[in-house]
Each structure stands twice: as structure tokens, then as C-alpha cells.
Amino acid sequence: MQVFKLVFFGSSDLSVAVLDELEQLELLPVAIVTQPDRPQGRRAELVATPVKDWAQARKIRVIDYQAENAEQFYQDLSALKADVFLTAAYGEYLPKKVLDLPKKGPLNVHPSLLPKYRGASPVQTAIIEGETLSGVSLMLMDEKMDSGPVLAQREVMIPENITSGEMMEVMSDESRYLLRTALPQYLAGELQAKAQDGSQATYSRTFTREDGRVDFSKSAQEIHNQIRGLTPWPGAFSYLNGRRVKLHSSVLTDVRPECENLPPGSIFCRDGGFYIVCGEGVLELLEIQFASKAQISCSSCAHNYRDGYRFESFPEAED
Image (cartoon, rainbow, N blue to C red):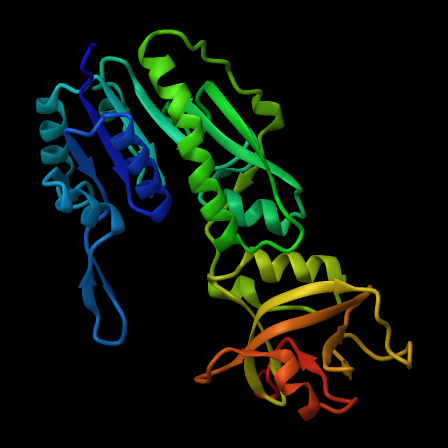
């Protein structure tokens, strides 16, 4: 059996799932590239990526200094004389001279059905856009973002109420399934790459906290997609009596208020349910969290909100 020298690039939990599959395939990387330790929390303590923890537990060399020393990074990768690079949620741009190093090319596992949703947040974007079908792609990398030819894909359904965090777990499993057959086939020369149709390409971007601000003049469907697409991060939020409220989960409903003329954002509670009037339709909130408080179920606090309370996109001080 031919032995291939593989270098892996990744930083997230999805990356760890791919590494777990490589271990099952007996294709342990000769080195693992990840992002450097970052300060987290109020104490700004340095925290390693889950990929670095995985590598150190198996005594695999870790390279985490691309941004700090680009030339040393290139020289060290060149010295490895790798057959293939495999990236999955690495989070950094790789220049052409790095991509040209592996003998059998650089591969990427991307959680979308390319050419749809290239870029940094394909899973979140697909949910926010109301997609019901997505997938994972194994592709050859080129200098442009997620534009290289595709080697294999696996379709995945997006359930109606799933959050992006939950969907990423699904994508992690599906990435493993894809690699299980596609990577050995590629290394054996049995897969043909197919160029993407650039005219069909769509893109995803990095989301910020501001993207979580909810505008209840939008439809219930749009807001439901926003809430689940931005959970767990950066999180959807609104304001109630000037207090910031994080909206953790919701479902669409056919329940309607007794007064059909209530303005968007209005709250009405029925039989323990916590409902919000939207620009079109009604949304039932299931879990919320006030600033500096614990996450709670809406059914446990619905009795506190008589008709007339209303969510606002901005606190009164910002009006």
C-alpha cells in the first residue's frame, strides 16, 4: 500500500471531525497547520484551537505561525515534501507558492454545494437564506476563494428549525462520510475534477454582532431564519423595555393575536406560548436571555408579559 505524506490545515471543530476520519483511514498528517493561540474571556487567557489540542495529543508537529513569519512558514512546508495538502475550516488565505508545494495538489473540504456559498460562513448563510438543501464538497484549491474544480459532493437536507451550530455538527459528520470514499479514490487517481460554473457562484461573508439585530417589520420566516442562522454566534437580539434580549430559538406558528392591527414586535401570550407579531406572520419564541442573565424558556416567563409589551430593534436611548 502506497504511503502518502499529508499536511492538514484547519482550526475548528469541523476540522477535528475531518482529522478523526483521517485517523480512521490511517492517513495521519505528518504536520498540522492551525491558527495561533488567541486570547479569550475576561482574563484574555491564550486558548489553543481544538485542532492544536488534537495534534498535541497525538504528538504531531504543529505549525501555527503563518501570519507572523510567512517566509519561514513556506520554507518549513516546503521541507516536508508533502504529497497532498488538505484544508478544512482553516481560516487563512494560502498564497499560490504554498498551494503549488504538494505533489498531488491542495484539497479543501467546504460545507456547501459549490459554487453556492463560497466564503467564510456557508452554513450560516444557507440557513439565513432559507435553503432546505446544502452539502459538502471536496475540491482542488486555486488562488481564488473556493473556486477550484470539484472532485466530489454529498447532499445534505437542512431541517426547518435547525440552528447553524447544530447544522455544523451535521456537516462535520457528512464531511467524514465524503472523505471516507472520495479521498482514497482521489489519491488512487480515480476521481475526475469538474470545473465550477462561476456564473452560478454565490458568496458568504463573516458575520458581526450587528447582524444579529432583529427588525420585526420583516416576515416571521425571515426572522426565524435569522435567529437560527446566527445561533450560537453572533446571536440574534432585540430590546424589551430598554433591556437587551438575546433570542435563542423560535418556531413558525399559525396562532394569531385577537387584534390583527398590532404593530410589529408586539408580544401576546396564550396558553403559555410567547408570540411576536412580525411584518408578515407571527413567530413563537422558545428561549430568550436577558443581558447578564441565564437563558430561560419563554413558557416559564410568558405570564410576566401582558398584551401591549413590544420588542424594539433599538433601546430607547438610541432612538
